[in-house]
Image (cartoon, rainbow, N blue to C red; front, side, top):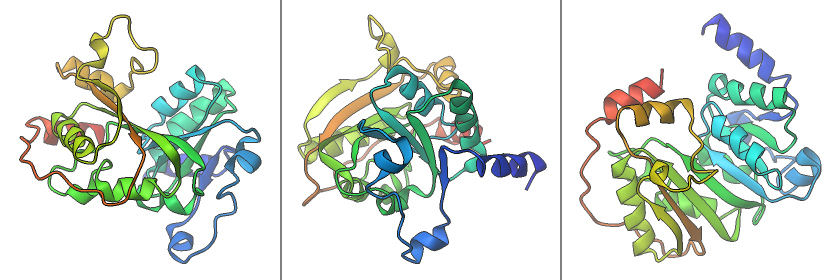
Length: 248
């Protein structure tokens, strides 16, 4: 591991708004002290909590927190060296409504109590074209989200991937989730949407390559009896190159 990553990990340990819990403790059943008490112990207010899953560098988490001070935001990712960017930025900006949790997304139900989270943002997740159960909008993930998302909670997906967007729309339609917004090109909106117009570093790369950014917002109003759509979806032809870029 490079010295730069090591220094970032060391600095993250000192950040007051970053929570890091070992997977060993989670898998071992070690209870998480703030589960059900994030507002009381961490944010020290009663604002609604919004998660960004797979937050990467945390740019979107920070931008959302700046634009919506009436909400608390938590960026979640397993890669601490990337998350350091947003954690450092939010600290420099003096934001008190943003935090970061370093963990695997598969484990997040360990950290939040039923009804504790109001909304979930999925920003540019890997479309996982070969394995349905790894897609962050797959029914197994939605079932997990339902363990801590409030009744009628909102799920946002913002993506460059036609494959993931098509899959998610089909899954939403099949399971009859109420759709609040469905936009095939967010940057073509007039006037621009103040939240959807937020552009991360990698989003700017997708746009510069001529890709449109898509968005769907739906209500997770049930998780019982969810079904996966049985459809053939054309794969993204650009993805392997682009994903390597974002993973650099």
